[in-house]
Length: 192
Image 1 (tube, rainbow, N blue to C red):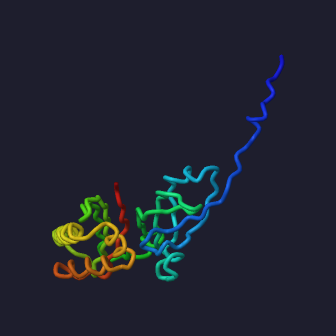
Image 2 (cartoon, rainbow, N blue to C red):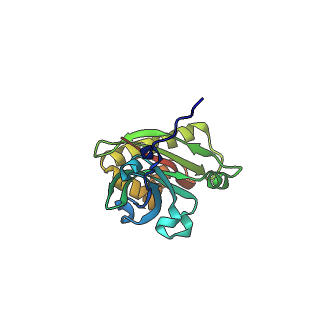
Image 3 (tube, helix red, strand yellow):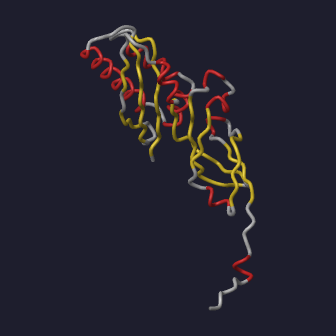
């Protein structure tokens, strides 16, 4: 039995090249890495995970990751948009303590520019509290976040989460119900 020999066209391989990946405008288009592609258009749609400390140069942010989607390629540079912010699992375990309540919530909000954003806040109460009080905290946070997101565009919401402004505002909104020692965002996810 004869085997088919590959033609010269089949043997030709496309030469791959490196393109740099730039962070979104929230991070002043800082270069976050490189990727190798045969055609620059093939990079579109890829998701990149970056530690927040690398972008902000702030060691306090080492327990958080941000995610970017590549949306365009120009001049061998991949342009991205910020799509998610997440806390690392080890940090979540570190902030929970015995003798205190941990309150999780998750809700989808609409931003001023019409995009949907999922925000998952976490609160640690100062002492053990009643379930009715936890319910009131959840209600107060949802009311605050609904008002906040409908008056703010999605880019500013993500910037406020990264800069810790939203967490401080949530803590202020909740302290009328009961004192909390920690207010953080487990995840913020932009949906198209």
